[in-house]
Length: 583
Image (cartoon, helix red, strand yellow):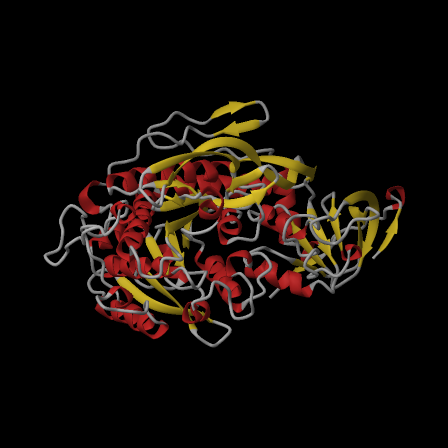
């Protein structure tokens, strides 16, 4: 790459026969500053304010879906004949009685010492696919292989004529993707998803398939589950590998999401009981379930509101009706001033945040007890099943609304190329809150007053002008591959040319990691044939920014998928270049 002063920038004409789709889209998008959201059912048309199109409120009543939807697979008020809740052995046990319903999977059997094995999980899913009858279609999809060669399995459930991508797209129904056990030592998530898979295939939840398609991935980290360890075999935390895609497990999930384009995703986890709360404050956490939507910079505004109002609020109500306690996701951390409560991070590397940047509703849930082994296991599974069933119901109720919002967000994000700002870094807001915890001796509630670093409200700490796109050198092939796995459009430069860009320059004394400090310098650059261009006039533009701005958390530059700052630039005008689509 060579640079010349902006005043000397040369231009050239595009030959019509090789005009790229990008150039055509740029012309169309330049004609409008915003894309209106269609009026929602029962609501007046969208209200406009200067410079902004505002959709109707998200809090209108949900349509009545009748008795065809069941909130939980089995009514907790109707115990099975053999469902007998054990008598509590201590005041602490009394806080977490077993549910009246008894769940049944291989790993939940009486007298069982181990959780469902990988072989049993595979057999369970294949048996469900074989038992599916009538209008339902169920198929086990092997969407990849783990590092030790274990099959990565998903169960696709639909009322479409087939279970392939085209059939689900043609069905007109939105798709929900449910995934569990990214951390191999969080078994209740997989057990709960096996229950959900059965109830969707052959049980009361079948009726939900009238309105949605569902993909169930009970165990995303089979190697970790087999070893009883949180990480993958390579020592990488799978939940923080959804942007860099270093593991085959994360790569396979990215392709599954790219191909099936779910409108809502749920990532099921468990959280530990013992830890800093016990060590520093002498208390134990009390919530049966913690939940949090995506919380990273540049999330689509209205999908985020939908996650809160259409998903989280009904989930809280469902848990309360089931006699279960809930809270926002948090983890106790040591910080300046003592013990703090931290919510899920703001980096675009977790499944929760990456999938939110794909313009989908994205939620993480954690049941209580990853370190309890088999203690309170039925209750832990019950909390997961209740929350997951609530999410499915919310998608059925809001299916048409969700499609309208996603379509709006996709057009709106693409239309912002070359104008406005994007947030490069953001952090949570420090607040004070009261946390109800449990005295382990008496089982009584004990309130704690702690600083809570809330990521429900993000504060931008670094902004830049939104570029038209990003130029990448020909040596950035690994980065390009990962972008395409996530569904981003990348174009190859077919003929040399020149573009006006902002070049990154590292400030003295800063490092390549979290301490990286950059400035930008405007210049015209000569770009060679065979290099790449990532346009920002596409629906996943904000995901591209998360990966390609060098000083974002988890950026491709920081993790050396891009060799040096000279290998990338922010293109600040629509480039007069000839491109070719990549295979």
